[in-house]
Structure formats: structure tokens, C-alpha cells
Image 1 (cartoon, each protein chain N blue to C red):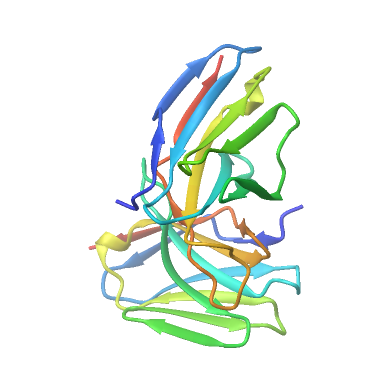
Image 2 (cartoon, chains in turn green, orange; image 1 turned 90 degrees about the vertical axis):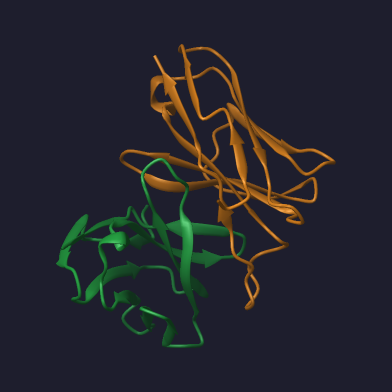
Length: 110
Length: 117
């Protein structure tokens, strides 16, 4: 039973524009949400996180928005750069484990 | 480089066999986590150890077991291997216990790709 869902397997965006990656979750007990980025042949790398007590967290070009009532979060990358091309995983934490979505493959084209 | 190391990088074996995957956490990290990434399931949490003790279990099969040693490295043992066990196995580490508001981040190793023929 997938508790964290990323419904878009892939996304293509032009360099300089905004990339918006979406994530939905079903378990209202999740209290911490994270985004990881993964390049081929490497492990996931932590990108940004947000606590359930907040609705926005910003770090440079990356902003995560959380809508608890809709059980939805999104990652905005502005401006997008070719080096951002990777697979992005949304994860939700409850207790010790991270529950991951299946990932969205982002391609940023020049 | 996350500081988490995993060996071997690749492992090819036959059905019915037993293998051991090894993970060394980042210096100073006491928690180790194991995840499995298969094609159709995404990243699935298997098990967590904290300072040598098992702390949490996820979707880990009975044929799989893990342990964390006094030097904090961890091993994941997979036995009676089946074709469906072919996957990427990731180890992650964090400073301490997760699940607090100031949650400590999990840092992932590069993974071990297991192929069962």
C-alpha cells in the first residue's frame, strides 16, 4: 500500500523556468516531509525538508510547500538548471522510517 | 560523497544462495537504515539499527536479517534468494534517533545492486 504517491513519473522543463514536482500522501500521522534527489549510480541525496507545523520552507532555488488539509506537498525549483536533471523522491517520516514515493524524473533542457 | 560506504557495488548470484551486504555509516552516526529499491516498488524501508540494537522493522522478509556491530558497521544478510530479490539495496545513516521534530537527516550510501539469476 503506497502511502506516498508521486503521480508524475517524468517532467521536462526548459532551463530558467520553474519546475514543480508534486507529491500526495495518505497517512495523516506523517509529521516530517523530505525531498531527495538521485543521480544514476548514486544514492539519494537530501535536498530539503519541512515539518508538519509549517507550510513553506525555502533554501536557495528550492522551496517546498505543504498543504496538510489536502495531504499534498510540492517542490519548486526556480530557476531550473540542467544540473537539476535527476530523479526526485518525496519522502514522509513517521517514527524511524522514511516512506518514499516512486520518484519523478526531471529533465531540464537547455 | 555522503560519507556512507557500501560494499560490494554489484553482486550477481544464483537462486537459493545467501549473500551479505555491508555498510559503514558516516563517522559519528549511530543509526543505520536499510532500504530496498526494486523496479516496481520504489524505495522500501527494511530495518533500522541504533547503536547496535534493532529499533524499527519495515517490510523485511523473514529470509533477510541484519545486524549492527560494535564498530557501528552493519550487515544485511539475504538467504534463500529468489529472482524477485534482485534490487538495489541502500544503506543510510543518521546521527541519532529519528522521529523527532528536529529530525536528523538520513544520508544514503551509493547502494549495492543485487542480481539473482
